[in-house]
Image (cartoon, rainbow, N blue to C red):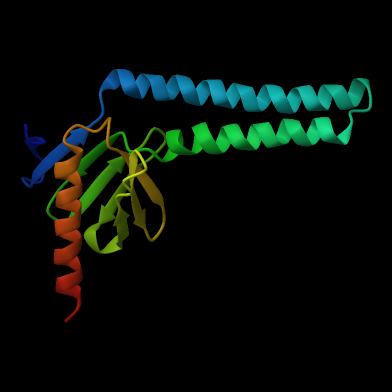
Length: 159
């Protein structure tokens, strides 16, 4: 099994880069746009139906229930899914579609690897990140490094 790509940073520290294929990132951007436009169109359609005729409550509730379901199933994983993970000696840098987070090893609260879920869940004090086991190259090595560093950080801060 090939290792994560090792690089030297500008400060001279060794870092390992784990990333998703670019075409999969492009698919996430496309999905984000589709779900975003779907949200806008459903809300606009409801406003239009209110203006033209009185819309019944069951229709409106069903529309917003569908919107909530689609957002939870598609939008949340797209937003919180890690695109690139860079591991250095003192921090973990996670890039998602919309932001980049620099996380010190002490800031990581827990890492869960549910067998029934495609994602490993990394929880920090401020955010939640999803690491897709199918998309990130060498995800197993990345998760082992994170668990090892969490153990070192917890052991070093206990005294």
